[in-house]
Structures are given as structure tokens and as C-alpha cells.
Image 1 (cartoon, rainbow, N blue to C red):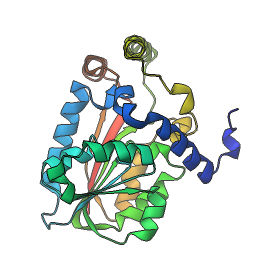
Image 2: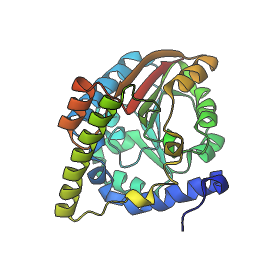
Image 3: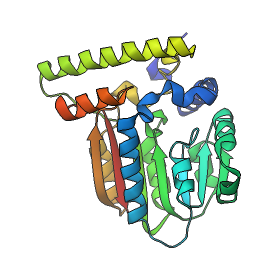
Amino acid sequence: MSTPESTLTREKVLEENKRVHKLEDQFYLDRHPEQTNFYQARILRKTIDRVCFEMNPSGESILELGCGTGYLYLEFLKRGYEIIGVDLSTEMISVLEDRIPKNYRRRSRLVVSDVETFANIDDKKYSAIIVSALLHHLYDFESVIKMYCDRLIPGGVFLIFFEPLKQDIDTPIRYSMHKALADIDEAFYRRKMTRKRISILEKEYHHADYQRQFGGIDPDRLTGLFTKEGLKIIKVEKYCARRFGFSSFLATSILKTQNTFNLLAKK
């Protein structure tokens, strides 16, 4: 039985995220190819390049909130950084631990915790704070961002990556084409998951993806929040994420539609 939105609490949203991400376990990235297809991989590489360029070279470590099974986390390890990863899912942390090469492990620390609890027990300062596909799972993402802005050293950077974009598509025709492409993309995805015998957890995410109930996240609100906290906005990137890279390319470059954003800010 679903819980009415009006009765949802912070604790319920947290509980739902623990439950759903326990189901995801080692198949998380298989179920979410929109995070790893060739189009998104290119965006990821360019974003990491920019983060590394902007960071204060002080030797302080990186903190990733919501590290999951590590598709961003591992990239920073490969580049030689010390990094702490926090995730509320024991199962996903376990998957990530198994994926870390032995020669990288001395630079890695993984913590099972929700991000608000971790903020209350950790007082370290960081060169970079990475938040990937996390904000839309939070009951109050703005308070979490405020908590962590103070954890950056001067010159540190704050990356918001792969969040659902709250917006309106400006014309009915463009929306119709956007929706048609999405339906085709999703149909091929479902066939692929059936062939691989991987279950699709779409009905499990309604409450866990809490902010999607409100249409996603408005990057303008984040821009105002970061500015108020004393950070400078370096870049806001908007694009259309789809299960397959070619669909992402068509939607972003040809149809000019967007459903996802990244934001990079610097202290």
C-alpha cells in the first residue's frame, strides 16, 4: 500500500531509500544505463576534468555523498585522490568495496550512513564535495547543502551531478517529440532487461525519489542557495539523459530538450 504524500516524513523517505537501494545491490548500474552510456560517460569525464582543474591543490581529500556502487568514486581514485564515500545502503557499499583495486584501497574510506547523520559526526574539511544523483532522494535537500557548504576549504568545489531538472518544455510539439523518443528508448531498455533477466524496480521508487513528486529540482534555487553560502557558480549544465546514449544525443542536440542537470560551485 502506498503512503499518501501528505503523510510522508523525513524518516519515511529515509526508510524507503534504504529499502529500495537494498533491492538494487550489484545490479544498480545495469538498471540505470542512463548514468553510464557513451553520452553520459563523456559528460562525466569532462565534469571530473573540470572538478580537478578547479580544486585547491591542498592535498585535502574528496567527500562523495551518495557514492552508491562507485561510478564517480572510482574515477577519482584512478586519478590519485584520497576520497571518502558515504552511502546509506550497506549492500551498495559492499558492491563498491569489491570493485576497488587493492592498490587504491589505502586512499579509500567507505562509510554506511545517511548524509545528515554523517554531517553531525564528521567535522573534516574537504577539497571537493561530490553529490551524485542524491538530492532528489532527500526530504530536505537544501538543509543538507547548507550543512556541507561549511565543510569545504577555501578554493574547494561543490559538484551536484545528475539531478532531475525541474522545468517546462516550451512547446507542445517539442514535448510530443521528446515523449515519443523517451517511449522508444524505454521500450528497448525493457527488452534488454528482460533478456538479461534483471527486474525493473520502477514501482518501488515512488517515495524514495521524493523530489520527483514535485517535478524535480530547480537549479536556480541551488544557485541562489550556493551564492548565499558564499560560493561562486562555475557552471550549470543541462541535458537530456536517456537509457541509451544515442537517444540522449538526439534529445539534447537535435530536439534541444533537457531533463537533467549538473552544477559546479566554488568557495
